[in-house]
Length: 313
Image (tube, rainbow, N blue to C red):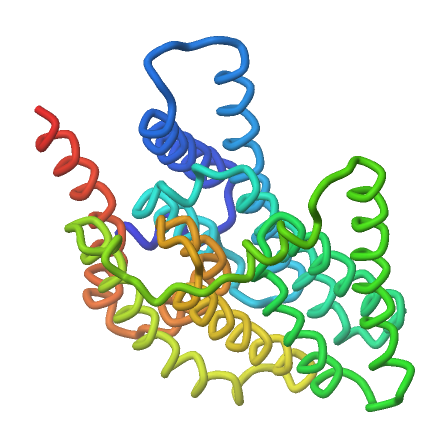
């Protein structure tokens, strides 16, 4: 019943996600801002919301354009639900922008399956990862996707390996020159951003325990079936599905080593995880199990919100 509502891509589904993300942004924004409201806080809220919602639109474009899911809205609904589950992911404009740029990069890498403009796409993909790294340092880990994509989609010519390196070096050279002109400590910024922390005590709360348990358990279960189903996909599209697996694995590694465990670092996992779980929901044959599976995912963020409001009351 519930899954059938999102079984097709309809404008109403984008409106639903619009409100889900708006609620998540409002929830996280009220935690980090004082009671005083002025034009600056309103502009910050609008920027956070627009960047978060735009990332959903990019995800939908990547998924539908490359047939990563069937013609439905499951992946964007799941993406919105994940954000509502951990609304802290919308609390940093830097991270939301970093996530958008990473989605741009993944889009260019997946489009390599067309075998057109390969060099340009490799340059663009590395460029967007470089830009994302300027907003969140550990985004550099996603550079691993480029050699993976080269092996999956192209021949191993030296030029294909050098182009991404030239692209990302170009980004950092331009950025360093701008920092030098503005007397900004570029080295200090990088040093602070690339620190590592294995202290997970910040996740010791009902919200994070419940959310992470659902994400990892449902995600791992869906991943097993996702891997099995890849061989049933069109041969030309299989590399794209493998690339999504690499993306979620890198996002998990980033989550583990993130220097500040605030919950915001979960954001990088949401897009590939939404695609993986959406694929699993699509292949579930038992209607009752499909409804239960999706309903649990849908109810968890609602219950967490109610618990937060009741604890305040």
